[in-house]
Image (cartoon, rainbow over all chains, first blue to last red; front, side, top):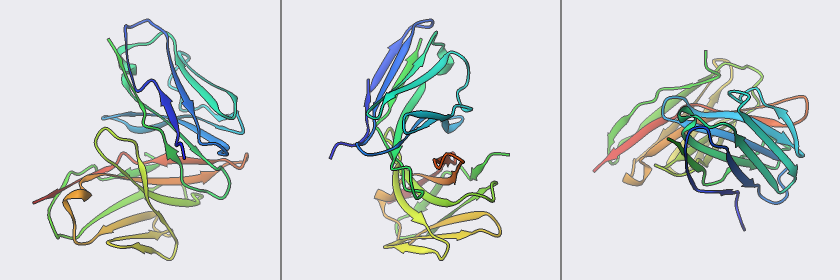
Length: 114
Length: 113
């Protein structure tokens, strides 16, 4: 079975450019989460969706960050304009959403902004 | 105060040793608890859930103390392959019925030959 699929795996971009990260959750999972991981701050929850609806975006660091989930099988995280301090690994995760189950992670997108 | 706190380590232990990690959480309404393992440059993966009565999976034992708001992970007979970062995860439901997973920053373990 396919797990959570993220693309691209690696992204190098120049400061000021727009970056779009993509995620396909596991089929049948109702909850989707975007995390950012850095050495200094660990795994930070940015935003999560339930049934395609954003539930809590309080972790989104700034207005430069936005996320959408147009349907149950696709989500995007966009950074515009990007800055060097956005360099991190961005993970997408999904879960069934009922009964406090485990979350399954994608392989992550390693973003470098130069 | 962070919602989930862990000692970052690193814990350097010899093969065969027993090692224990603790994690504290601040929200008494937290409902479920997990330990995840993360290898270098990989995604986090579930190691085990943590149940109120405590649970064991082979060499791994997890315990929960709700009164003191901490969870623990004990690894017996450490193997070289246990070297990884261990992430404590606390899960809390919200009014939408969605469960929000909050991760600690992780404890690094290095098992030495």
